[in-house]
Length: 77
Length: 77
Image (tube, rainbow over the protein chains, first blue to last red):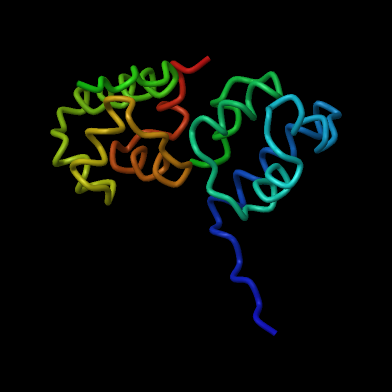
C-alpha cells in the first residue's frame, strides 16, 4: 500500500489558513468553490495542502472569501 | 506577425510590485534569481506579468527578497 507523502508544510499552513478564514465566514466548501470559481475538489485539495495554488487561484479564493489576498498569506512568515 | 496578448492585469501588478521591492533592495535580477532558487528567465517573466507564479514560488521570491510574503501581494487588493 503506497502511502502519500505528507504535504509541504508551507502548503499545509496555507490550507489551514484558508479553512480557518472560510469557517470564520461560515462558508461551506461548496460556497467557497462557487464564489471563487473553483471546483469543490480543488478547494478540498488546497485546504489539505495537496495543491500548490497559483497566484490567480489565491486571488480568486481571497475574492470568494471577501478578504484581501494578504490575509491568506499572513501565517506564512 | 502574431502579437502576444497583454498580461493579465493582476499578474502585471504582481510583477511591478516584485520589481519595485527588488530595486528598493538594490538587487539585480541575477541576485534575486540566485537568492530565490529560480532561473534568471523565470524572474524576468514573472516581473513582466508573463507567468502565474505558484504559492511556493511566491514564498521563494519573498525569502530571496527577505520580505514577508504578504509584502508581495499588498498591491493586489
